[in-house]
Image 1 (spheres, one colour):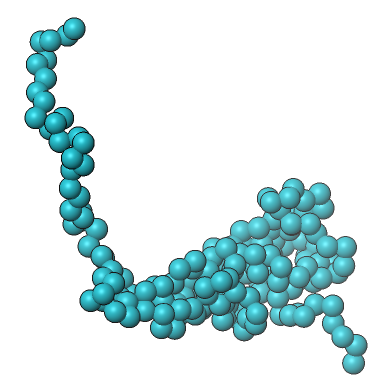
Image 2 (cartoon, helix red, strand yellow; image 1 turned 90 degrees about the horizontal axis):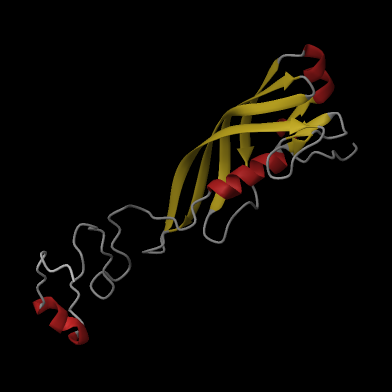
Length: 174
């Protein structure tokens, strides 16, 4: 058995077949992700459907994926899980523009793993939160102010108190 150059063959399209059909191919994604994480959250599983469509010398990949992730809550540090919905629309072309499109590979397989990995890393939460009303590990000592309508009380700097008693006459234009 020879090793495959594509570690996840289920995340690829056959380019000759795609260009011969000159149409649309569908790929069902069921990817159990290993070792794809940010500092605070880990990607676990991507599930969804992607479509590849040829347009001249370009391949357009589109679809929707649901990403399951886990990470520590930023307040209580308990492991929390979540699901994100990701809309995917990317273009592969011969003369790719860096940051805008991806290059069509010279092989016969269009491996979507690098593109999907990029999308996943940009979608993972930077600071996961288990729930909006999480009080944290010690709410008495370190309260989490979740009520944004209540402004903290701020005293007036004594150097500026004299300005509070000033009045201005609108007729005085000098």
